[in-house]
Image (cartoon, rainbow, N blue to C red):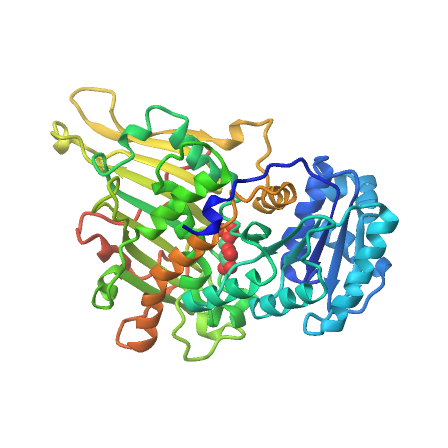
Length: 513
Ligand code: BG6
């Protein structure tokens, strides 16, 4: 058994600490990380003494950096920044800047000196998080430079690194990346972020399942007919064409986000609720995914690419017209696939996973379709489909709904499906925190429950890698083109193998009004 399985989780209070963000001038830092840290500050969740060091390639003064961050907050943490101008000013006193060229070893010597100086003058112990908000090809270089200068050593305080996805480009490269990181960091110092796991509503799937007596008994092959997981996006690849064209939907969304959600939906209850026990259970699901053989790929995986389309009297660009995308690119922007989890609970129950860009709505949800009642007394009188669904809506309008048949008032026995829904927004006093707030805070206290462990990363690569390889090898496997603002290629419905079944159009049934 791997060393990681044996380690137990440490839950600490938020100790005084330093956060170094590599790539601090980039999009992710500006849009997500810094607003999340600012929100934690507004919520009084940061320790008394902390410093955020932006490490970026640009040359700029501390003052200019503070001004840049203030502007980012006003743009991306608008309400918090506008309503709390004094807090914004005091937050800026905690942010610092050091110019670092990630390729230059010497720059890490300068960074070390700067950290030592701040640690001494601000009286902050050298508890340090290094956030790798940088292109993946730099992960190993930055880690090697940190190791070279002993910035990974824990004698004078803990050190943790947060690595963004994708963790590797394939199974082999993920193993290689891990090997290189592990030359200077232990598994419990490495936090592989998957922001889907930080979503409040993904965590709620575990609570829905394991804190209620009535869901768990039916959560298995005896009562469940199939499971649908959808993560649709309205926007295209936008300015990320360069990255996306060498990645595609399989690496961008399926290998990480959607398989992690599937693992949470399908896992066994852990015997205790701690980081290792939960991750021990979810990894078993990923390890139990039934490999898709090359000969089965066309029947079980549908890939698509969006094309130029007229939407609301305006032309929406096709994928091949996006900046940074090859004009004859065969990269997929949509995937629908049928997956099986070969274990006792789920034997032969299909999980249908679908995700894509330029679809009609930005929606993430899981739908558990239950088997029909054993004897269909009202079959001829049903207005719509007559099976029950449990809908776990992750976003937007987060919540849980149960869909079931009810008698339409009046003569006779006409049956219609109705929806009993709980909306998170009804818990009005509780704001739903952004995934990055939750995940950063967890790393600050040393809780890795919601971070992907290496065995899970490897298991999901092991599952998707053969599909990617076969696509590369065999150009005859179709890439279907679809118009923007549709639910992807119609071939996605064929995955059900039953003309009466089709994907749920997610936006229809889960509304607050
Ligand atoms: C990111 C992907 O990890 O997740 C993006 O790289 C995608 O391509 C995004 O748009 C979707 O996240 P969310 O939270 O908006 O569903």
